[in-house]
Length: 247
Image (cartoon, rainbow, N blue to C red):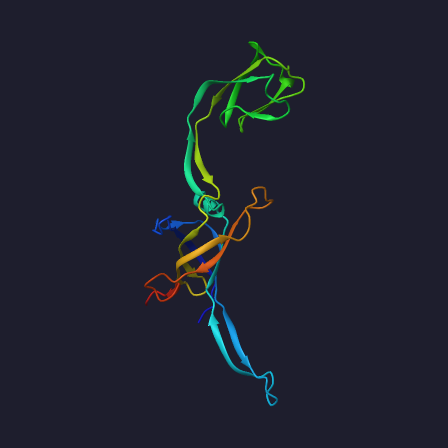
């Protein structure tokens, strides 16, 4: 006999829109993998004089098993899960000598306008072929933005010349996939006796338990909760297997 104190790797196999497996993916660091069982007690109580209030019959009605999952490694697939979204790769190629023009008689002052790309390096800001005074504008080159201040002229065309850095990444389209359904697999080790622990959740339907704070003071985490389903042909929604290597 031993207590249970587990380490473990968590894998997720999200079903596609047609309910098909997309393959097991290591979700990274999971800080919670909790299954909760519960039942509802139905009781028949006496109203008779002799035993008023006593239970004559009681039946436990099984409730669906619940799961709580917390992830603190917000890679691309995990971020897609917490945003109920779809994921795609994105990139931009390096470019030089790009230009963007702004008509000062049209654009509003003291608000930022998009230049056309992120991660840019502005080489010049000109009006009527002359360098614009530095106090007349403000740049955010990482975001690819420019703002014209009150001191800027009210007429004329501003030409912004810039280069674009090569970059690769991904995009999450939030709220694009509201259903999170699939298999969860925990392959762990009980540190108390070094036995191998395998928890196989055949089908879980998850929903985010809390929002994702992008400006949290500590590392952000993604919390999910959900119900376990018993797939067709299976006798239970999950299994727990403990194995110790034979001597």
